[in-house]
Length: 238
Image 1: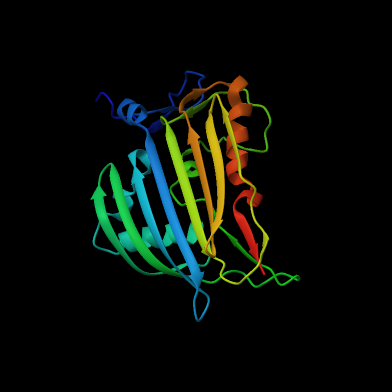
Image 2: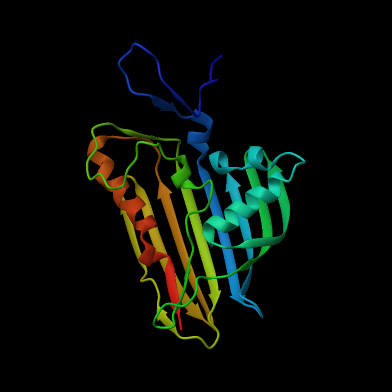
């Protein structure tokens, strides 16, 4: 049927052509977004936090969260754990559960890694489960400076991860430096603010989508490398 292969990778034997992703034209036109907002503060034991996720388009985890066997909790736990390693979800609430849009809030506990030799505690927000990197082709390797084949993206995609950390009377030993890039493949921005004992790290990655020719791979790679840069997502408290 028309459209039955949209959003899937298709390979035709005997053609000599590499497998190709066929984006859904409606999704490509509307764009997709994932927004994850996290707030953490010290608790009597470890840290506690709240989170909010808003996902639309291809990022909507409707299928993953549907069902009566604890699928929704499992997805929220995976999301929290991917963003802050070691997180344990205490409770959650799904405000919107639609095929193309999901919104959910959750409370969680968080135990960072032990302090380093200098007594600094590292807190870093990682890649959210089901986010942009999960939607890239398996042949995309950031270690490669050049490509000989195009990259096909499923439409315009935006991913935002915001982490608010209550620093209180702790000194900020190291924090990310704000920066931004914009090129033909999309944009990346990292915003940092500190106010009233709270440090906010807000990073947004937008990919324009469609086909990315081999000649344009360096531009796409530059954006993905910025998003992956550990220095742009880690704060050290002492």
